[in-house]
Length: 212
Image 1: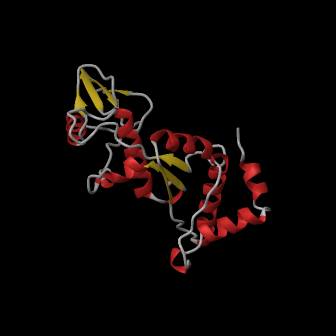
Image 2: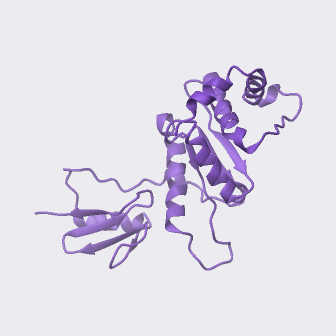
Image 3: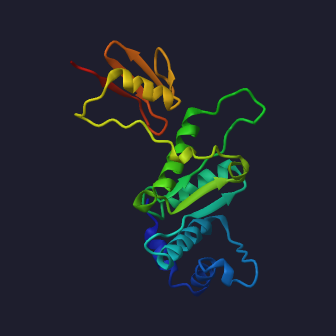
């Protein structure tokens, strides 16, 4: 259910307007640290209002608002709440790794895909970039591989010609794992003239059949 109408109604509240104006101002213009105490239910509206204020003051390239939460669950709940206030895709979650640095475990493939999707959207900018990125504090503290957002994805288009062996090499170079049966994101399988690919950023795997 969309709550955008309620967000619009709040713009007539003097206290709400004062907070949004101050929070969206240039940090260099502030004399003191700006702290806001608010109930949980008000936070999505405040974040959305601040993002809109920043967009209005910095057209045509508005900055992205980074919202840091104490826990992973709080970050997920915040994004869910923001989706009721903003347009689809304007609020995105940048999740933390579930694994610790010393553990010999790989993070979940859907976590990898979600992080890559956010990084690519931020790198692309423009209309595809989110207005708000919500991150748990653990995600802020975890380092990123330099240049990861610049890694070019393997791109396929309907109707275009593609070399079979070259595609396999491209997938391997892009860190896809070759398996017998695709079951996780970041995997691909080859059987005859068929290649199954599960993109890290896709909801479901795709099958490509080569003819000729």
